[in-house]
Image (cartoon, rainbow, N blue to C red):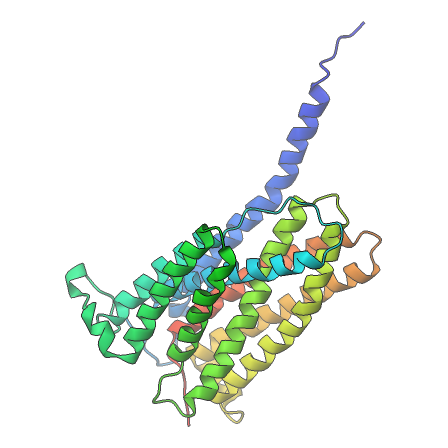
Length: 335
């Protein structure tokens, strides 16, 4: 008679489960590392052969801007999906732990770094003594940078409090400040540009951050049909968000690159090249989103749509990194 360990099967299954989860975890780590490298390594290839000169520290600025965009998307997406949860019948009580406090703290550090650059005349400070904090109050850009720093700090405190929903107000202040910063008063019709950027930022944050939290919630609910229902609710709103992001992105690009010059600038300017890369990535995101929607509608198990949705989230992380790089490059404004 052969004696067997009754726990060996469970242990083997547990190890198999851990091995099966290693692939997605490794993919996330690789893509996050790649997303972080894009802003750092991107300026030189994008500027090569264009005759344009990058400002000092462009890679660092792009990385800080990427961190700021990501930090904004995470809490906005969590607030969005938590409202959707109210409409999911039979939703399990377990929900993933929020990342809003950490994300807002990262946003605070990124905004502080960007403010230090503004405080030194848009140059990378070589020492703390070179930072003129008081000078921030003397310019529009400096006041907006301070607003973003304070808003992220307040948002982090709200997220850590007993009423995390209140962080919506400081996060709204960050969006408004970023929209105004992107279009200085010297630009032609700056309010129109700021309005387009505001809508673009809000919709992009809801889309990317919402998808991340929806996927995390589905993972917490694995085995429950409520996960497919939640993804379906998100998908309906995400379709509208995709249209809004595309429309505002196209309008903003046409304001900077008139139709008669856009084809030339997409290949001959750093801004155009990175914009073209973003368009290609967005096309991939749209294809993955469509694949997920088809699975939701036709598959016997709607939760199987999580696979293309997860790939969509990975590519969206790259889009955020490319967007951070785009804001640090010289803009080919031609009026």
